[in-house]
Image (tube, rainbow, N blue to C red):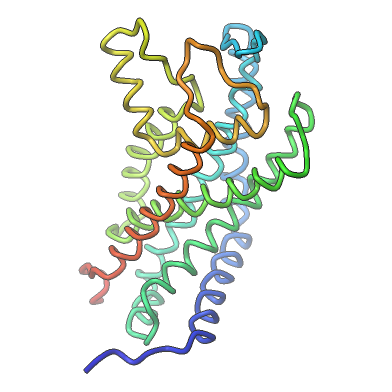
Length: 278
């Protein structure tokens, strides 16, 4: 027998309820709010002030932004990454408490369940990123209504992408300790190799080690997110000593990455682990 179909309004209600549950749970736990915003803020201040005079990455216009300016887009992406980690933990907690099992046996499509969980985490990440974005008022940023709307859309897409990736890892985990270990092993190198902390070196006159770093960073989808954020904030491409992709290439990679990560989250949600049988 085929599985019963669920009307679209009911599916939308499921997405809304799961999304709202993530929002309520997150903001009731203030330590998670502080951890998601406080850690990137402290890192931005410490590294930005400490390396501001020793960092130099000239732009095509000849200006040399300090590390506080260069590191700011990476700090925005770091907030999205931390939020993806914190919100994905709810999957492990829901399985341990039995809530996830009740959702799995209900006549709800897995894509609706994934969308509700991921959407809630992405909204939380976007709110926190916008709060942190207020720091840009003290930086030399080229503001305009069009750029701000595009930046918000980009941050939301990146939040969906990172939360979907967190969902993929959290689904197979049965302990929060193991989840933290895996996420630190995967996400921190992914963030460091995204152009957040140092630019992507150009291939010209590069050593073998620099070429390896170059291709690792180019294969990283976060590299294109950081590049778009920096472009929307400063509108000053880096100099010829560093590699940068075009705006269209960055946009395509972000959209494709979002689709692939969300599809992976839906696919893995169809698999069962031993914790689902408890």
